[in-house]
Image (cartoon, rainbow, N blue to C red):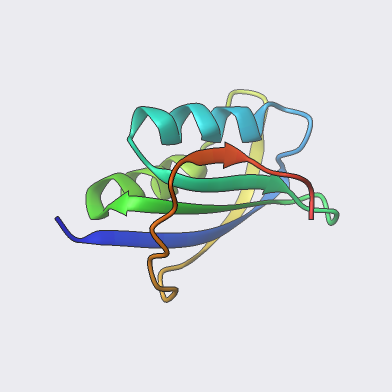
Length: 94
């Protein structure tokens, strides 16, 4: 199975609305590895690694987010090489 990596930046009302927790739950459910974090600019950043199908579905899900979020844009970058991350986690703000 070929692995894929997506690095995404999500803008909108995405902090203080359980967005990171929601991303983590869905990433675990899809068997993805990577991380998600709040950014000091008020946005959210995440990296997903896994099967092509799971990564693309997770990026699609990020466009909606949890019920109280308002997603304005999702910028995705598929150009980075897969690093072989071991798990999915919520990391510190950057």
